[in-house]
Image (cartoon, rainbow, N blue to C red; front, side):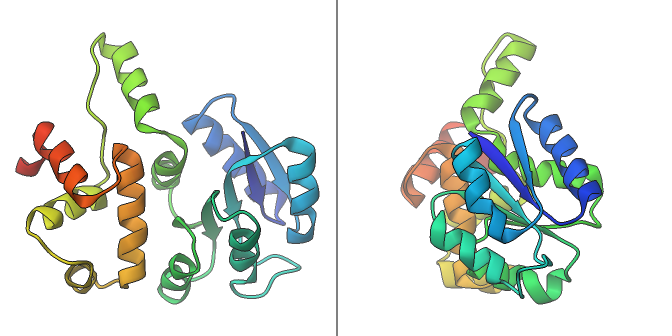
Length: 203
């Protein structure tokens, strides 16, 4: 599987490639300077595991790049990595199908944390911890995912959660999709059972 970094700035492509390799050393990363070159790159380099997309490309306008990728590759994770203002674009990108919104102004640690959520599976995390400690470790959750678990335990609906977090219901659904994928479950009930089994409801 391959990660495609779609950005017209060579330095940014190189920087993202370096950060991706810090998350998953040896992972194949292909740079694409324009949206209209993406299909050719995928045909040449193989199926995508993740797209990292800059909103401001020479041949895109607004969210057109997000719409294009999700229409052609609906099952592939998409991270928008951009200098565009989060207050204006983050919610719109998530509603259009993006899995993460990463500001280029973030420090490397923040960007790596966001990439890990998309590139590191629970099985990989468990294997890393087992190699380090000799014993399996439970799946790690982000701060937002811990919030979702607690809100599930309180019996809150998607609308209630959206109001509490000041985000749209669609974005809540995206967050739950990522949480379920992280835990390897398919429903709220299974997620709560997993959380109780691992003692996470005291967090």
